[in-house]
Image (cartoon, rainbow, N blue to C red; front, side, top):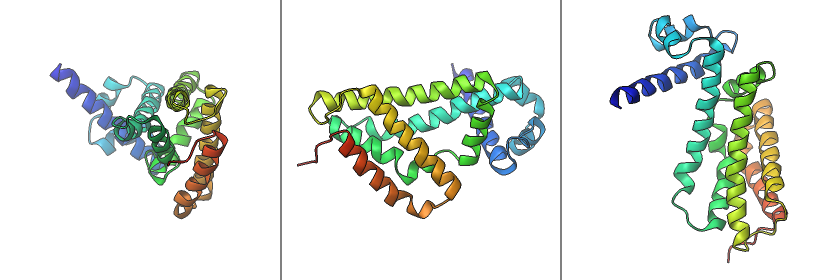
Length: 201
């Protein structure tokens, strides 16, 4: 078990270096040789963990998914009230913290590959399915307590995700990082209204 844990830790460490190289040199510059140099290891160690560059990118998308999920788990796990859980979830995904979890250059480099690589596309699809499942659960729980007025929780979850994608893409392109929190509050206010979310007493 210990050996497996150390192996997984090394694998995650290498994926962190993959992120750094893509951020600095782009997806085209993310060669196995360059990543190995950044990580301070021999290229053979990379090929031990990732047999091909495609395999490495697939693993990287899973790594990104885990990073996003970790942002939720630590902040909502201890909240029992469905209203507070949903509000905290919106605070996370429409806050500055969300924009800093994964560098946009890394995320959109992987997204670009997903348009041409079926395995990467499947991993991206799984990422969005997991986020949608999380939002559906949170919306369902809040609706069951009468906190929301939602007829179709899946459509409501997809609606929130589509707004999030537009929100993220805009900041990635426009770069108005200083205004993220103000616009995030604006988005959250209107999402709550559209979900029929009752104000706190």
